[in-house]
Every structure is written in C-alpha cells, then in structure tokens.
Length: 343
Figure 1 (cartoon, rainbow, N blue to C red):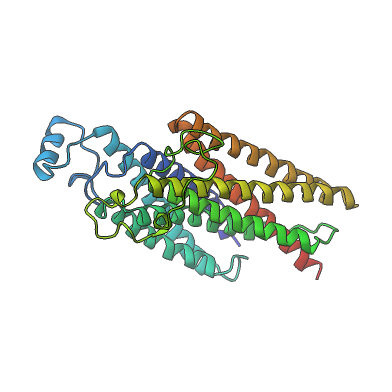
Figure 2: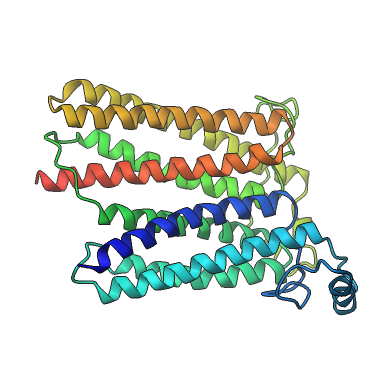
C-alpha cells in the first residue's frame, strides 16, 4: 500500500503535464511552428533549437533549404521535450500499476493502453514533420493528446473513493450524459480537422459564413487521405473544402450546445427531486460547472471568428474543450458508479 500515494502523485503530475502538452501543441500549431525544426527528433541535427551564430551556421549547412527561425524552433522543441517527459511519466506509471496491480483499483487495460498510446504519439510526432503537416497526421496527433489526457483522468477517477449518494440516476440522465460525451468527442475531432487544414479563418463573419447561412457543401472536405503523397499536403484543400469543414464545425458546436445545455438543466432538475443533501450539492455543482464552461467555450469560439483568431483566445479555446471533455468523463463515470453501487 506504500506505493499508492506515489501512484496518485504521478497520475496528478501526468495530468497536469498532459494538459500543458496539449496547450503547447495548440500554440505550436497556431503560431505556425509545426515545422520549426525540419528534422526529428533533433532540431537541425542538434539537441536544442539553434541560437548561437555557430549553431545557426551549422544548421544552414545541414538544411540549406530550411532557414532557421529560432523562435519557432524553440517553440517546437519545448513542445517535444514536454511530450517526451510526459511519455516517461506514463511509462513509469504503467510499470508501477502492473507491479502493484493487486493493491490499486485501476484496471490494467488503462496503463497498458496509455503505454501504447505514448509510442503511437511518438510516431505521429515524427510523421507530422516528415510528412510536412499532413492534415490526417496532425489531427491524429492532436486527438492522441486528448486521448492521453482522458485516460490519465480516468485513471485518477478509478483511484478515488467511489461516491455513495442515496439516489438512483434516471436512465434518461445516463443516456443524455453518454450522448453529450460522444458529441463533445465528435466536436473535438471536427475542431482538430478544422485546425489541421487551417480552416478557422475561412469564414470571417458570424453567424453567417461568407454572407451565407449554408454555403455549398464539398464532399472532398472529409477525404482524410486527400493530401497523402503530395509534396505540399495542405494544398489539397481549396476554399470550398475549408468552408465546408468550418461550417460543419459550427453546426457541431450548435448540436453540442443543445445537448450539454439540456444535460445541465436535467442535472439541476434532478437536484430538486433528490432528498440527499450531498447528492443535491453534487448535481447542482455539475450543472453550474457545465453551464459555465459551455458559455465560456461559446464565447471563445465566436471571439476567434470576430477577432480573426488571436493566438491567446485560440489556445484557450483548445483548453476549455479539454475541460468540457474531462467534466463529462467525470460526470458519466460517477453516474455509472452510483448506479452500479445501488444495483
């Protein structure tokens, strides 16, 4: 049992670092620093971003077709080193979880899947550079970061004491919670595809897009393999495809808002019915938290359009999407645990 506090601390540290990696990844992508280093895992053949005159000269000699931008190279290498540190933490966690498998409540598939995901993320990070920001790879790398954080968060929830509220969640509430979680995952995928194809600024107006409520739809917008094999993968999508991606992300946001708002209201209404004071507070807290974070995300999304994608707001938009995902995972996990405990 002595290993338990260390495992808990390691999971907490990994969650915090995973969030930092996601935000650093968003900053790297949005500041156009994804190719700040033309090679992998080093940077211009060096362990860190070239900064001195000698290092920059050596970089030019090795990669004459890739001028050194020290700021972008530093951004890219900061993201890489943070991701590598996170990978180390996760591998240690996986080993500890297996070693103490009889003493902890985490199912072994969680640390095992995390270890596999770390390896996959390393490959995707390499392919992001070698395939020159192929949108499918960039989106997969982004989603891998979200999945890593989600699995770490789920591990933390398994380590916590299960609630024993004296109420039984209605089947409708459980279904709505699951549907909202599925919708936020789909919306994150749409957001990742929007970002990977640099389609966030294709519609400069709101609520219409280019003066239209529903621009022409192009099926090529969701050909995920479209840029494969091209020297410049981003050239596959033209303005029609980017417009389609952007509009679909907006429509997804509308559906997500309706579902999560309904869930928030249902939690508040459920709180009025239960007799347990502890359950009442828990339901109300989740209701208000969901509503607050949802409104914040909507404001950030609209601000991205109206203010032409400011870097700070765009990164915050990614961060709040993470918060929505984690809140919904915690909500569904707890509701399921309550239902199981009551038989």
